[in-house]
Amino acid sequence: SNAICERIRELAAFRRAGVVLLYRPLAAEVDISPLWRESLERGCAVYFPRVQGRHQPLQFVRVETETVWARGAMGIWEPTAGDPPPPDQLEGAVIIVPGLGFSPLGERLGRGKGYYDRTLLAPPIEGRGLRIGVAFREQLIDDLPVGPDDVSMHVVATADRTCSDTRLSLFRAR
Image (cartoon, rainbow, N blue to C red; front, top):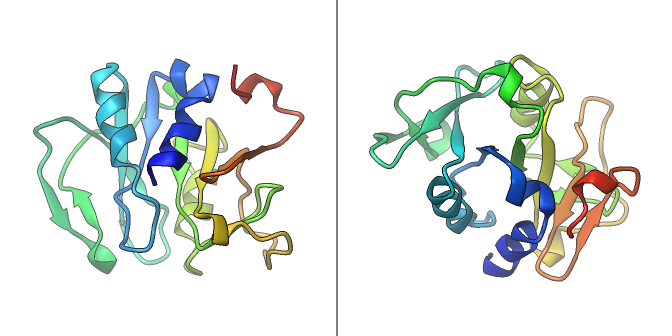
């Protein structure tokens, strides 16, 4: 997990971002906690998701050091309160996304319920921000079974490499 966090730190877009959307990991997911602390220390607005309902998009809410957390749906820690990000602040945002698998092209396989796919296309995000998938080496798969509703990532970061859409030179590490 630390090496993956380091890959993300190398991205110019992450270093410039004033808004960062993160997640609290399940046991088998990449632990991005160092990015959370670092983003708060840099003065970024940091947001975490809450489950609103089974077929609803996730609601990202702002967290601070004093945020109260509770176990929500699927046993994931969620902030109990907070304001959603203003849409106009999401253009340069960085969104770190977990998944079961990713392809080098940015395709993502989630857990099958579509939470992130719906969220990344729904208000207030609506496709804004740089989507970064984080994965362990064994989760990077060339031939990933994805469907028409699966939202791709702009970047996929593993411990050994960062795969990005070559058309997005703005997001490359400098």
